[in-house]
Amino acid sequence: MKAFLFDLNGTMIHDMDYHTSAWQHILNHELGGSFSWEELKPQMYGKNQEVLVRVFGPDRFTAEEMDELAVRKEQRYQDEFRPHLRLLPGLLEFLQQAHARGIRLAIGSAAIPFNIDFVLDGLDIRRYFSAIVSADDVQLSKPHPETFLKAAEKLGVAPSDCLVFEDVPKGAEAALNAGMQTVILTTTHQPAEFSHLPNVLHFAPDFNDPFMQGLL
Image (cartoon, rainbow, N blue to C red):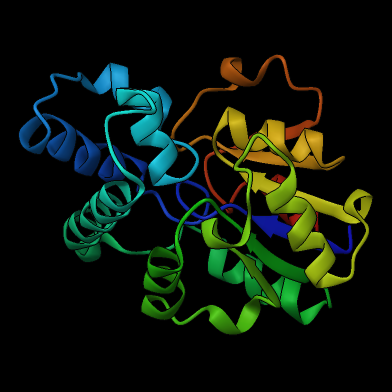
């Protein structure tokens, strides 16, 4: 492979429970909902505004209200997760080795730049990535392939030469729709949840998995 494309949340850092927790607080305590953890977990993909539409329907909020709620949610998430901010085990070394061997690296995430900056600058790893595609850069979120296709285009690499690292079924489906294979980090979902996706090469708990070294 000539390029590695990384989802961010749940793939590079183990933070998806903090996103769910932040949403649960806002939806239940600020917006009058009564959503259980089990109800919210499957909704944790795509743009924040899309989460609100999936949960409350398209007519509950104006665009401006959704933007404001999205920012409040991310501020709460960052406040709660900041003491735990760290890369998945083995990822720093994996990035260093891939970069040294000339493999192009990009981030393709439904996160807003505010959250991507929180990770890249907070962990001082921005220098490894030649391209970043955020929620603000696409019209259609995963499982639409736009995120990964734009990342490949920015890198100047054909989609078939890109390998995607993901943690959720919708992300793996986006890779499939982009014509890319994927490796799944099992931080959030179990292998059985990906059984319908033929492009999954491997499941790994982190980047210390021996399979990862074989990719370099």
